[in-house]
Length: 264
Image 1 (spheres, one colour):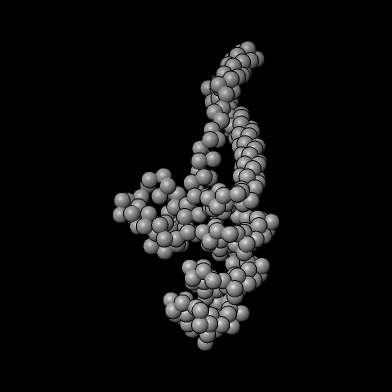
Image 2 (cartoon, rainbow, N blue to C red):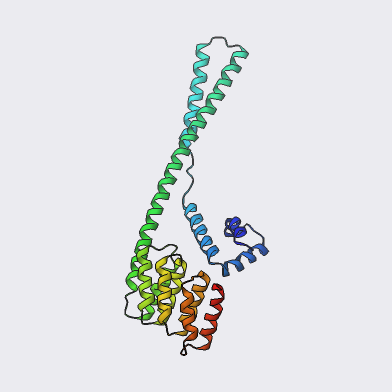
């Protein structure tokens, strides 16, 4: 199933309004498509937020006030007219019905407008709370990048990687971690997080810079694959240097040779 098809029925999938075979196809697709997983997460969060906002029910007093006014109008009509012919009764009753309809519509319109305003205010408050929560989480994650143990730093990088959007300050700190952390697992996690922002010139420069001097085979292969996918032409010379280096292990050379085919 393609991404566009997933997007069109994502809400039905979340609410369970699709057949079992389609559900299985979507679940299988989400396992392999990060873009659709993010879309699914955002849509589910939006639906959860919308469920918090309860529709306001028109006040019972509106109905009572209308009927009181109707009875008063009928009494006034009877007192002011000693003899009311049938045609006149029909005319007055029709007028009252139209008047009643207008009053009800106005009442509901007022309440609907008020409800929209309340929902807008609640949405604004939710957005503000989300923003504050995001800032707190981001600050905590950034602070954790300087923790003494590798497991703490790795957890911080993974937490940052789960965030939907990063600012350039966070990207810069990830680049620094990617370049200088003592633990290869932390650096690999940072490289994976940075791959989402590979359109950034700073990120591409970091990939190239690290690959030129990298000795760890796993990191070399990771960066070769990333730069190949990005079709970064500046990587051609670096790939050639890796191939011609006698200290490069065969599996890395093979990966670099595959990568060179992109630039031919």
